[in-house]
Image (cartoon, rainbow, N blue to C red; front, side, top):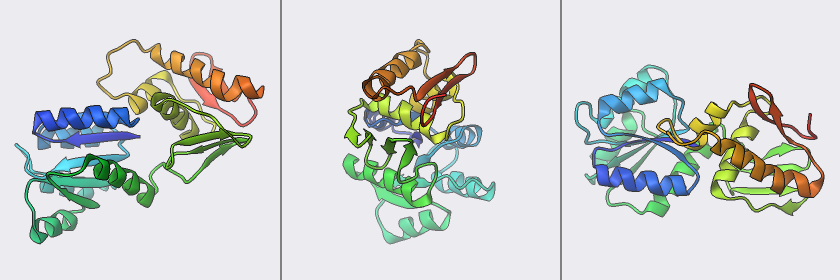
Length: 225
């Protein structure tokens, strides 16, 4: 799941980025409203965390401009303020949820997952490919009824492939979905995780569901092919 965090408090933004990445999110950061609006219009996000008190363009205006442009990405607004009027204004401008600082990180993550589930953006209840079942909400994977334990990144790569519903997903698309737009490491990290998935969800069950499409990327199929 890909998240945009628009927050001008750099320490908080960095903390959120580290924490969300540990939960398997791909996280992009913006530190002012104009940068956040530009990123939100240039990239496809599953959910946006948007501070209200931002330099250059406040969160209310960022939200209203996105909605006016037809962007229905779920938005969770953050603010240091506390009160019914601020919450009402956030919701009236098009935000889907509201959280006042200081907030519980556990609650933030739970609300982000709930937003994506509620709006139905690319997070179906269960993704099934033959006897392989992937539950994004519970972050579980089973094959032939047997639970397969995956790391956070492995699960995120598998979910990215599953969302494509049998279509081909390029290495760059996986990097942007599972890591983030600013990733500057070795792109072969994708191959490492693909190999790990094959060892865990294919080899023990004599399956070949994680396939390579030469020159194009990877594909998840029910029975190989």
